[in-house]
Length: 517
Figure 1 (cartoon, rainbow, N blue to C red):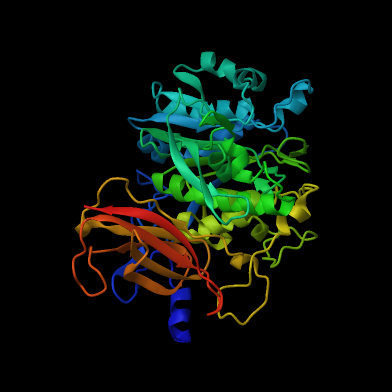
Figure 2 (cartoon, one colour):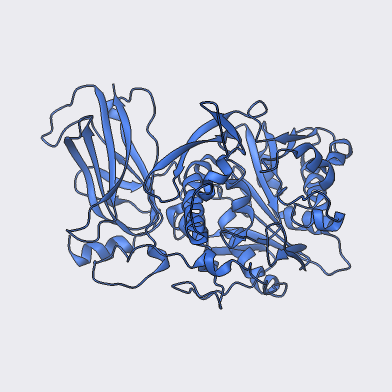
C-alpha cells in the first residue's frame, strides 16, 4: 500500500464510500442515523449522512442573569426543538434520563442536591413536553450505583413531579423487573480480553424517546460528565447475580475490583464508554440532550465538588456537540494538547468524547456546530474556568502505544492511544449468505485486516486489508472463499485484526462467530 493511498484514506469523511480490493467497504448508512437524527423538518433536521464530516450539528443556547430562573431558561433553550420533539415522541414513551449521582445521606440539603439534575430543570423540561402533548407517557429514569433509589427520588424532589404533572412516573433502570436487559461486551481492566455485562435495553428500544438532562460537572475518572456520559453510564446495571455470585457492572466499566491504578482505571472506562456508544447511539439515543448550566460543579466532582453559577443552558440532538459546548462553558482550552498537559486542560483531554465523535456518532468540533438560538460568543460570555478534579493528572496521564502510522515515530500522540475498534456482534441465528455482512467502527486511524476463518482457525477469505480513517464501516461477504467457491453452511469466525505497527509485532484482533445458513 503506497503513501498516496494512505493519505487519500485519511482525508475521506465518514459519509463517503471507501472502496477496497474485493467487497465494498463503506461507512454504514444505517448506523449514520445516530442521536443527531430527526424525524421532522426543523432547525435540527438531519439527513441519513448526519455523521458525515461535512454535516453540522444544530444547537440552541439560552443565557440569563441571576434575576432569571432556571425553569424559564429551560423553556427558552428548548423552544427551537418543538417540531422535532413533537414528531420524535409521537406514539412513544418519553424517557427522561436524569442524573442522581451523589445524594449522600446526612449532608445538608443544598449539598445533597448539587450533584444531581435539579428538579426545576426537570420542571422546565416537563412544562415544554406537556405543552406539546398533555397525554404522552413520561418516565423520569436513572440507574444509580446506590440501590436506595426510592429515597433518592424523594431527596432530589422528584416524587413531587408525579403529582404536579399528569402521566409522569419514576423508573429504576437498574431493576431488571422494571426494564429488560441485554448483554454487552466491555473490556477487562488490562484491555487484553472482554467480559459480558447486562445493560438496560431502554436506550436501544424504539418505543422510547430518550432525553438526557443533566448539569456540567468535573469527574474523578474521565475529566467531565455531561449529556453523553449521563446516558452511557446509566446503561450498565448496578448489580446482578451471575452463577450465584454478585457482580457489579458499573464498577466493571471502570475496571475496579482489581489492582488497577488510577491511570489504568481512566483508560479502561474511556475504552468502555466507547464500546457502549457503538451500541446505544446507532439506536437513536439520546434523541435530545439538555445541559442545565444554570449551576455546574467544579473541583472534586461528580459528587463532592463546589458550585459554579453560570445561568445558562444548551440543547441539541447531538450529544457530542452539546458536550463540546459544555467543555467551552467549563473553560477547557480550544487548543488541542497532545499529550495531555494537566496545567492546560484541553477539550482533547476528554478522549472518550473525541473517539465517539471520530467514529461517526456526532460532532465534537466547534467548526461543525451551528447555533439556531444564541451564538458561540454569547455562550463564551457565560464560560468560567472550572477547577479540575484533584485526580486530573492521573485521569489524563495514561498513554497507549506509538501511533499506527508508519512505525517510525515515537511521539505519544493521544489521538493514537490504541483504543480498540468495535466489532458489532453478529446475529445469533443463521445468516443468509447473500445478506452476510460485518460492521465495525474505528475511533482512530489504523490498519485493519478483516477475515473469515473456519471454526478451526483456517482462513477462508480475507475481506479487507488497509489503513482506514476513523469511522463506521460495513463489509459484505457473499459466502464464498478466496477461490470464489461457495462455502458450506456452518459456524465461521469473523476476525478483525488491527494495530500492528511492524512486521515483528503481533497483530491484535477482535473475534465473533457467524452462523452461515
